Length: 100
Image (cartoon, rainbow, N blue to C red; front, side, top):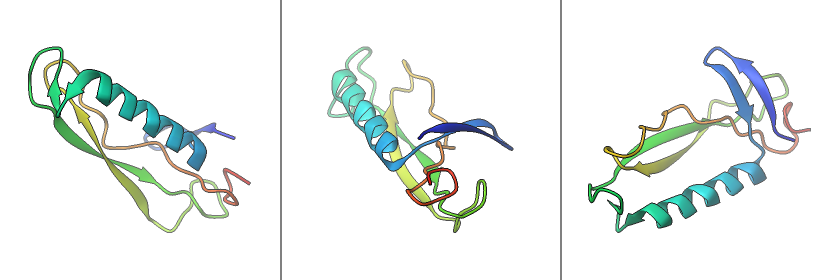
């Protein structure tokens, strides 16, 4: 049950753990299609990594949680790709307010 929620950073899609894992698979597929040993296949530049923090919304109230985040490194080409935002989509585990 992914939903959009208005936050101080703007509208965010709240991800279930399953949706997050699906997105992670899509990112890994894109990496394997576009990079060889983290060298861009399009321009030959070395990829750089941006750390993205996904807040864990596991509390009983809207946008609440214990303050933990899931961090992941997203490689991108500095010449061909836009730098990813360091603010990732929130993850709402089963049993939380956003994923009852």
